[in-house]
Image 1 (tube, rainbow, N blue to C red):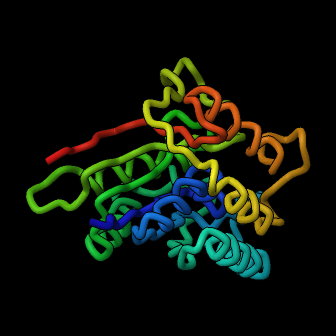
Image 2: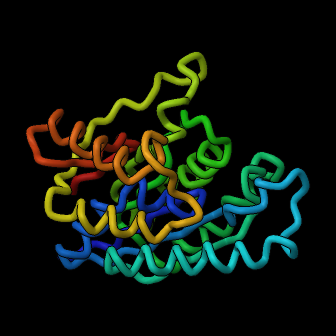
Length: 230
């Protein structure tokens, strides 16, 4: 039976960096894959948040996100448009509630979201919000929650605040790595030239390392929050 999958990411490009190859695998398996991006991804580049001034950049980033999704054969991501890199300025409940609403609408069996120990504060806030929004209650459809790594954030997380990213699940993306890299190339505003960690070359290198760790050509690695088997 096909699954419904929900990816909850903090910023445009996180959904591809962390789970792009696996999302494409889900599609090839006949699963329905949805993505939700919580923060708008632009306004933190200025000293003060000005969504009006940032409107052209926000429109460009939205277009890039839609093109990236198309490369993975996904629908365009839903976007909440919350303040970029300022999610810790909001009440956590104001992040949880819209995520709860999407979960109630989509009714996913599988959710992917950020590792809690990332350097980026938005990643941490989204992780906490998702775990609350998807908590196990009678009638819940969610069977599994997995956390992904995000280059240029996960590797810089403080080991004094968390135990670091320790993957327990590896997904073979040997057949979908090319699609992931093509999707990342759509993010012209976000990607950087090598040797920056957020470069296509570095992302491919990480996929090859994760593959070598698990006996595959290329892989994406995930933490496991919980898995239910019935």
